[in-house]
Length: 256
Image 1 (cartoon, rainbow, N blue to C red):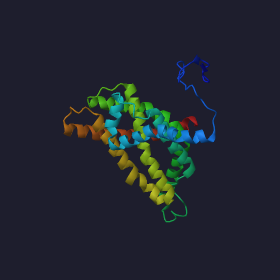
Image 2 (image 1 turned 90 degrees about the vertical axis):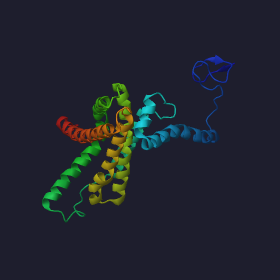
Image 3 (image 1 turned 30 degrees about the horizontal axis):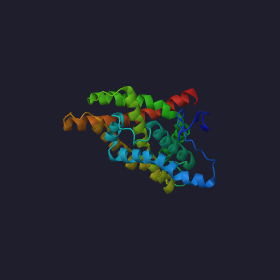
Image 4 (image 1 turned 135 degrees about the horizontal axis):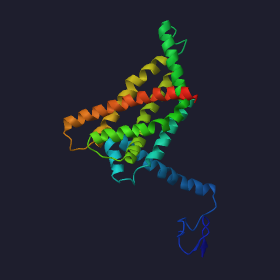
């Protein structure tokens, strides 16, 4: 007879029928810890890496698979989003990327310098408040997905649209992390000012387009489906800019 060390249940099996814990739980030692480490890492990374691979290989179809019930290979979308956005937040705090430097930008006119000083100050505020922005934009972004996918003949529930937003927010943040690291590496305000326009936003726009195209109803004729997907991508970009500036205004108003 074995007594479960987790719940105290008495049993004669290899696993506790009450809570599911193994009957033999050994004292933690370095050898056992090292033996279990690869399994623990793989258990986390398998689904996590699957999300990364599938979202960039087939962004809309991967999300559709999850919504249709093919969930076993996926890392949970909420946990996935929190890890990606948490990584972004930590890097933003550590790297402290700037968009104006009085020495490197000494050749600017007075009006140009004033503009980029203000832009840099706004970015630093954004970096500080980033963690509060996440819960602010999620319900609105989910509503846009819900509404526009209905235009594209897919009647997802609002809860399903929230899951789409979890996946999408994660996927859109990855190019931003890449650009952030590049900005920090080059340490050039001039490069930082153009990197979003040349790298980040084109990639994000393409992802939004393919998400909508692949999530939309395949029965829609291809030319119309392309047009609706392009409009959907434009809507998401417009929302992204509007949400950021609205949030910053609101944060300033309430003294966040």
